[in-house]
Length: 414
Image 1 (spheres, helix red, strand yellow):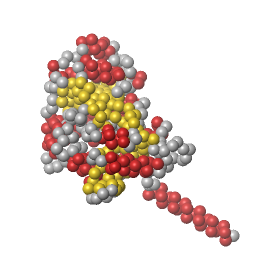
Image 2: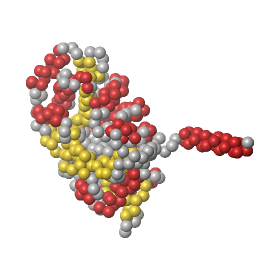
Image 3: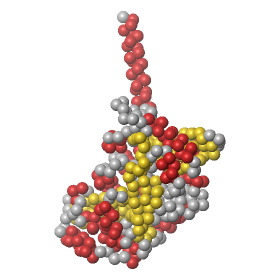
Image 4: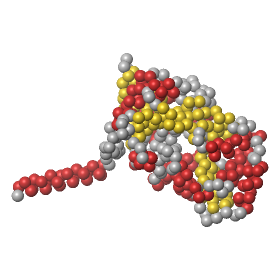
């Protein structure tokens, strides 16, 4: 039977969309299912403030009544304006080893994007830095962190056959026997000297309330540090307010390192989290009835640490802030009995961060790729915002049109 494309709009269709990976990866020991409620909320226009500045469509490929693939298309005017491009993003791509289905899915996103003046397509991306991105191209025998995708090896052949090429890669590292490592004495001495000058100090948190209080400053720093990267989308205040409570339950007070300058400004931060990948596997995408228990146990007792984010404000770079944070994190990890560490994706060109891992004999065990493809020739045409016109704007436009119509009628009668 031929492949047909269906847009997931109804609740039932969206459930089919987000449950499809559970079927595709059934029995795979490396697949980590995301929480179904989180996935649904990400595409809930009423809840996710990303939709204030972006739009998305969910497409499924079917043969008969069977779902054999899925993909999300995202247009982010904020990201396109920042980078000076007309790019439609794809994400949430999963497909059986079926080139016809993959081609139909990518064509659906291309057609939708071209309708709004898009000229290129890239991905896998999400709406923002906090969504999963990058297609696994190395490390298919490794379990991902909770913040990354797992996918089958044949995905590379599917995207290649659809005309995509590499835009850039991320690499990931794992450290074994971390509890037997020693922090480099030379680096530790440098950190001591930086602190002795009195220009910086390390914050210590007693509870999550104190962490929440500094959340806005951390997001501000995060945006400054990462904004120079391609595909990074600026945050709004509404998004910051949305993300802080979502991530707060997973933040361990010993694993957030914040360095402030003598003027009280946050100079840098580093965040690591207990690995919850195995807990998510046991939860199988659901918090209820018992999924939340697996997560609670994983946050209380763990031997693996996921390094999530780190940033230093531009004006404080090369002043030793990163050394202070790295040593503080190392000490906390040792105190908590961590045996293994996982990095999250790092740009392969980010030599600076990779050089900091070398002291701990890391293994580069995974690689992810962002693909790109031209879908239309460059044209000088107005950009169309894909977001639905808000109800109040539509009403105002209709009222204005009626006033013009009444005025024209009156003039004709004079």
